[in-house]
Image 1 (cartoon, helix red, strand yellow):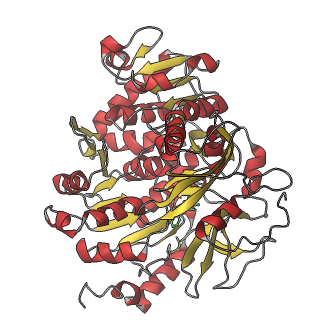
Image 2 (spheres, helix red, strand yellow):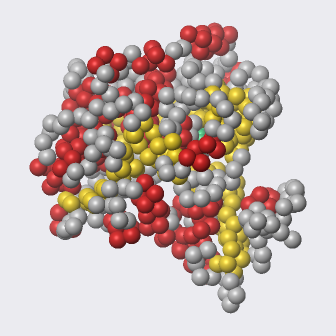
Image 3 (spheres, protein in one colour):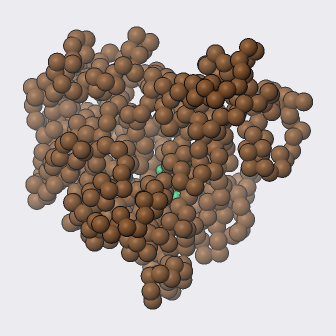
Length: 574
Ligand code: 6R9
């Protein structure tokens, strides 16, 4: 069977594979996974201990835990070295009086210091809040204010975007950078780390104690703080084994930034809970550097996102041939629909099936996946992993038969499910409004063999390059601009980014629609919120379609954009 024939991926299904899956699902018990953790014996619970210290106390002590590189730095750390560095970070934070349950944010580029700090936060039982380096002032402020963060670790450059004077609860600002750039009241990370002991007591916690807060976007309101607890480690370890297929000598590379849940659950926790070497690459995306990274470290398992694969595909087959990718044995994707075209391309040029996985910030770990021994149906997200039950349900909570489209729902609970939304119990209830089910907000259908097929978001959340952007957050920023009267923001389909942000804007009296004004407004969002939230396209309108209650009807804007029928307009203003 030649690899040029793409349909092989879909028709390789054998009865044996199917039975393997059925069998695993039948005999599955989360209690068996729990037995793999040291707390099962000792009763002492802390994710950072399981991820680092446990290995440092074993024969894997001197095994490489982290290979880090960016255009200027290149460093490697063993599990024992990570144990020591994260202890230093824990001591540094404790010295400031930070402890269990405190929210501590990290706002810096991907460097080893980020990883030491995140582990240190977890070791003292505090709650880590990772932020994308790309966030501008409003985005940073909203998240710190909502969470009541007491400390932030950032850099001399990025600290300009931390409005301390508007954040009364923020007591400590720690800077990672050159000493001469750091003056009081800022704390010098390097100096504190150097003085701190490499030994630290770990704060033992309960499985339901706070671990991490990931802010993510919904269709209304400000971004919400998705609160995860230490229990999540059970599913992160498990999916690391059965979905990522991590084995003792693997060299694993997850390309995600820890500002995104993929960059923590699978860029930190899953590999280290499994004691596996983790590759982190700082700096910007470039096909050449990415392929070089695979060759240089001999990466075996690679987890990335559709946008990245599409950009790699765009860079062409010739580039691939210039690098050694022969070490790869398992490739996975998450974040948005993985185009069949990309799967075919990956199979042809990498000789690898790209395994799609579906999950969300709120779910904490993978739920519906193509795992190693499963046959891939290009375009499908895969099947629920053993231990997880998924269904398509209607709005009343009835389970729909195969091939009917509806709400993608997961039977509650599972170990890594979010514990709550910070400060916002009402939001949490929206997800669990149907008893026994978690409503994802995605629509999908299931085929007759139990494969799930993603159809879209039920709400207006935009997915651009795999990042969730709430239209409301962008609209709010847009109307802050003096020229903007009203703004409606939608995701417009895009071949590379999945969706791009398009803004419909009505102008205030006295402003004229010009190309310069478009550019100025775009810059305004870029500098005020973040580059990825800035509209790629702006269209000026005299008036925007609104409901009687004054809500901008994004669905109508979308219909305009796609030249589709506008549907039921009974609630439109006039
Ligand atoms: C991990 C992560 C979650 C939303 C989710 C869905 C979309 C994620 C997908 C996918 C199609 C996949 N999504 N994986 N859509 N196929 N394999 O991405 O978390 O940033 O919270 O996004 O992303 O719409 O609801 P998050």
